[in-house]
Image (cartoon, rainbow, N blue to C red; front, side):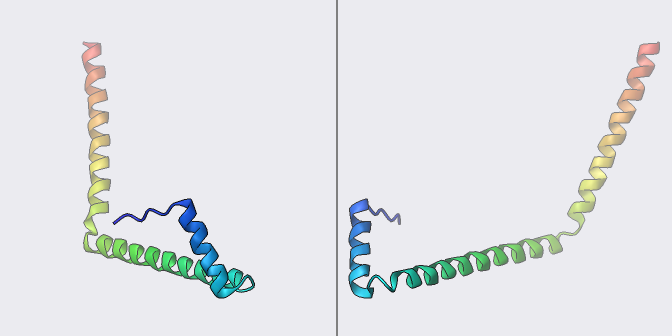
Length: 90
């Protein structure tokens, strides 16, 4: 579900908040909301990193397989260069 709020609706909500809480409380409310949003963001990032660590720990051979594949590709390239130079000499 998408949330579409127009500019007039934002102004109306701000006016209601101003009437309910008063001008002196709005900065503290904004600060509290910002802290809450940052805590949720940090918690989300921690959950993502824990999931990634879990996935990485379940498949420890992926890094070794990648390194081995890179080494095999390097040897193939070296072998191709060697055969090309031999073919040119003949």
